Structures are given as C-alpha cells and as structure tokens.
Image (cartoon, rainbow over all chains, first blue to last red; front, top):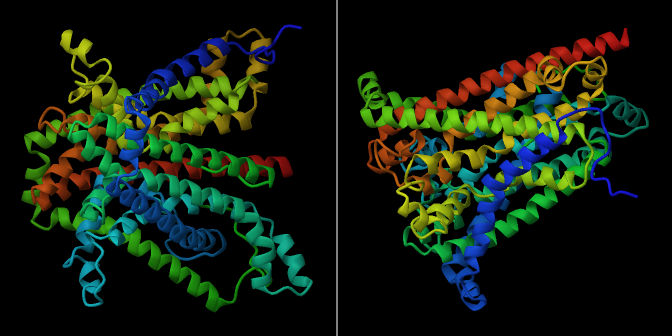
Length: 281
Length: 290
C-alpha cells in the first residue's frame, strides 16, 4: 500500500499553502533559532557549563523564574476573581473594564516599563505611600514582580472567562437543592471545571513573564546578582561581543521555554478533553 | 467576552450580597492598581509640562523619523504574517496530514521565545561576527543595525497572531461550504474569495489588529538588532527609551502616549469585533432554537 501523507479531499491548494507555511516558518523562525544552538556549541561542553552556571547567571535565573512564577501565581488568584466578577455579576462600567483587561497585550512593554518605574519611584503616585511603610519597589526584585504582574495580567482572566461563561448553572441548582452551600458548590463543582483553564492561564502567564524584557529593565535597576533578569544578561553579553556566551544562556532559556510550551499544549488538550474551551494566547 | 446572556441569578446560584460586593471591590482595586492608574499616569506625565512641550516632543524630527520607521516595519510585517496566517490556516484547518500538531506547535514558537533571543538569533546570523556576516560585508549589505534587521525582528515576534486566530475559527466552520462551491464548478481562487474570505473576515481582522499592535510596540527584539541610531534605526518604543534614559520624562511620556492611544484604538476595534460576533452567534442560536 502506498504511504499516504494526507487524507484525500476535493479542496485545492494543499501543497501550495502547506509549502508556503513551512517555508516561511523555516526561514523566519526555525533556521535562525537553530543558529543559536549551533553558536552555543562553538563552546566546549565545559565552557558551556561554566558560562551557564556562573554565579551572576544563576542569580539571574533565580530572579527571572522566581519573579515570573510569583507574578503568574498572583495573577492566577486575582485573575480568577476578575473573571468571576466579569461573568457572574453586573456592575456599572463593566463593559469598559472588560475591554481594558487586554490593555497589557496592546500596550508596548517599554511604555509599561517607564510608567511603572515612574509610579513606584519614591515620589511617584504609588511609591510615595509605600515609602513610609519602608517598602521599596523600584530598583528591587519586587519591582520586577510588579512589572511581570502587569504584562501577564490578561492571561488567566481570558482563559478562565469563556469556561465560566459556558458553565451550566443547572448543576449548581441541583447541588443547592441537595443541600450544598455556595462554598461547597464552588469547591466541588465550579473549581474542578475551571481548573484546566486556570492551569493553562498560569502557564501562559509564566511563559510570557520569563521572556519579558522591555517593561522590567526600567523598574528593576538592573543590579547584577540582585535585580538583573536573564534576558538583560543576554543583552549585556551581546554588547560585550560575547556572542557564544549570549547564545549559551539563550539556549538554556529556550530549552526551558520549549518545555513550558509542550506543557501548555498538553494542558490545552487536557482541558479540551474535559470539555473546556480553547485557550487564547 | 462581554455581553454574554444575562444569567437568571437565583438565590441558589449566586452569593450573598456582602460577598458579591467584596469580590467586585477586590477585583476593581486590583485592576485600578495595575491597569487604570498606569493608564492615567501615561497621559498625566505626558501633559504635565503643558501642551507646548507635548507637541514639541511628538513633532521633533527624531520622533517623526521613529514614527515613520515604526509604521514602515509594521506595514511590511503585518501583510507578510497575514498571508502566512491564511496559508497556514488553510492547510491546517482544511486537510488532515501527518505532523499537523507539530506544525501548530512550531507556529506558536515565537510566543515562547524571549524577544531578546528573537533579536539575538538574527545578530548571530547576520551580524558582523555572524554566519553570513563576512559575505554580507563583502557585498555591502547591512541587515543588523539597519532597517532590514528591525523588520525581520518585527516579523519574527508577530508570526503567530493571524494564524492563531484563523486556525480554530476555520476548524470550527468546517469545509462544507467550500466543498459545495467546488462541486458546483467554482475554481479554487473563486471559492477562496467568495466563500472563505467572507466567512473568516472578522477573525482575520482581529488577528491583524493584534498583530499590528505587537508590531508597532515591539521593544526587546528590535532593541537588540537596532543599534539605536537616532533618525535611522530608532522605532518609536526605542525613542521612548532613549528620551527616558536622558531624563526627558515629559517628552518620553508624550511619545509613549501616542503608543498608548494606538493600544486603546486596538482595544476599541477588538471590542467592536467581539460585540459583532457575539450578536451573530446569538442570532444563529435563536434561529436554531426557534
């Protein structure tokens, strides 16, 4: 039997569109990305290991992944509340609030960066109230978290919202008539239904926050070992013409990002199997 | 997302008024702190020194050059990724073939790659010490620290936007109408223009809006390949950075406010499209149930 690469169809254009898509993707994305890996292997294994485990680099991983994780977790909690309020309740200005949730997707990261840095500086709108409390945000790891919360804010809201909208209230009514209180209904019925979407939203927010650069560099102060994120370290290496070193650190980040991407796809497949809605980017 | 069917809020499917009020308050405080205050601050800082300073900042020759470059790179990147998105969605949503899920994952790759790395890979490829660097230098072609590099970096970060909108949409719509047109004798192109394109127009517009917003606002990737040459390779977001680092805060926020206005326009278009598709869905549901 002849090996068939695709199932037959009357529609035309398979070869043309698939060929174009794969060719374009290879030229723009795949071949250039492969270069980063090849370049990193200019180094011997020992050199590579030395570059990617240098104390300053390790400190930057800790900050990048730690701050991204905390920001994503923070957004998971508050994003769930925002999604819940937008779907279940009615209040004045709701449509506007709903539309503005996407602002961090549309706002250039550099604009977010300079705005947050200004707001949280010691005499900024928010910073001046934090100063008496001895909380420093600008130029500290806390500033990194604030910037990452901003840029990853919409993910959880937008993945959970459609699932909440599709949820049948009949099941809740049945549970209530059987004597369950609201908290039990949330725990036993609503939460299991939105859990896949929450996880997807968390992972998307986490992945986005790890790679973030523009919004962070303005507020972080970029002190080596303290508030220097990994993407900035890559830029610093590049500016010193240390191409191989920059490629090596990038490879570590890329591998971790690929693993996360794989997880996102698994979560999405899982949530589809559970009857959840498609997650948006 | 907005304008969902109003729920019959019976006592059993909603919370006590106190909890309801508390949750709304928490959500609004969170959004105020992280969204509304920053949004207001951009315009406040931009206009703080007066309208004169504002206008001077955005009509500065360097600012105008930056605006031109930003528009140029978006004008190249968006159509390219639109064609790619349509082609990829046609292949993925209309045919069954081996490796489809791999292809979908690869399209998402630029979302998972840090913008800085997106810029870096082009430097490694085309930079002075890059793989093609010596050849390019010999032929006097500049890509890195020049406009082509900025366009390439912009294309890279915006690859997935249109495809990601169209693939689920076209999968959900199915191929019945196109198959019918072809069986009735229409050519492939005619089918595409008369059937497919009208069916996907709103999804396509949505993808293009997202793609444009990102293309004009991209910072990290463009920053790495730009070289920050004023008047030549500065996009508007990079211009904002330079002004901010020179402590010209009012000017920096004036340029930032232009980008913010652009973001708000994108959000408005998005809300309009969503309102439209919601109405269409409800009309379809009403027809099916009646």
